[in-house]
Length: 455
Image (cartoon, rainbow, N blue to C red):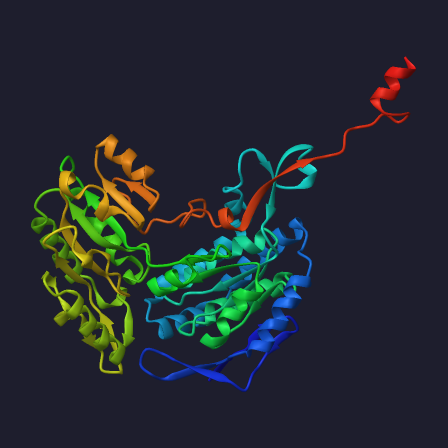
């Protein structure tokens, strides 16, 4: 049994209250220390009193941490794959993403800095100064994919002290990352790992200046009115193919959007809308998705997989299944199961299933009618890939505030780059621009007015 200790301001901390982590077969592989509320309160107070490393030291430490995180990672990759059910190749890719994010965190954060704002006091006499909105940043992390831990590194690069509450499903990635950051030069009072029970988790946010929370619709609703918390919810990413474009040349892109990285992410496409008859595209998609090997698909404990199957069957009522709930679960005979892709044809783009996001490759294909549907089925989307030549439609999509990211043409919804915002730039939330005016320059022998009087 592995042990995952809390990482507090005085080093590792092991508690009596231990959470057991099992892999997808049900075998117990690790225990995690769950810290009490008082430990959280005291830890957050220490972070608030700490001073940030100078910028040069932060950049040096982040660069070194990226190398440490990536080094000798085979056992880590195997463990995360075994527990999360993600294919090993996807965990390896996520590890590389996190390593690169360490090295590019500050550069990526600077993409959000207003052109008229300076990054430091030494760079401005009269103008805007880009400054933090606080000093301590809290993260309630998700466990669906390790790469979610690449984002909060930007807060550390900007001088925040960071507290991470790991997911109960997969705490190994943030533990390894924070250990690497500490070994690279960040103090124990600069970045901490606080595993805790649900009734303690809000204490982390309460004690922080700002926080970021991952979760479903209930989490979004809970924190929607709190300006100190940035909720990260379901993506409901989509693809639109209009009548002036052919879907056949972009079929590979659509398949990748649905199934890349096991289909577990918020940037995986769940809705596919086509202007015209959707049946030919749906049929071609079903053929391609059915041919995917088990090795690129997610695994779940068998009981959880069967529960997802039953849930899907209820959600899909009234739709036409091309790859339905009955073929979702492939029992591997060891207590785990592979979740196969599912695909359903909807009678209209207004069907509620279009927004159903599930933790496996699951997509809903619907007809889209420009005049009657308009933009309504495309709204509230993290990533929308639009295959269209209609400039006026593109302009409308780009102007819609509920569409976070717009890709055009043969670009999968799963495309990511360190310089691209995820759901806006994180520093849009972390930073503010304030006016700064330095003292006027004064002659050694008096003020300018005094000099005039002497003359």
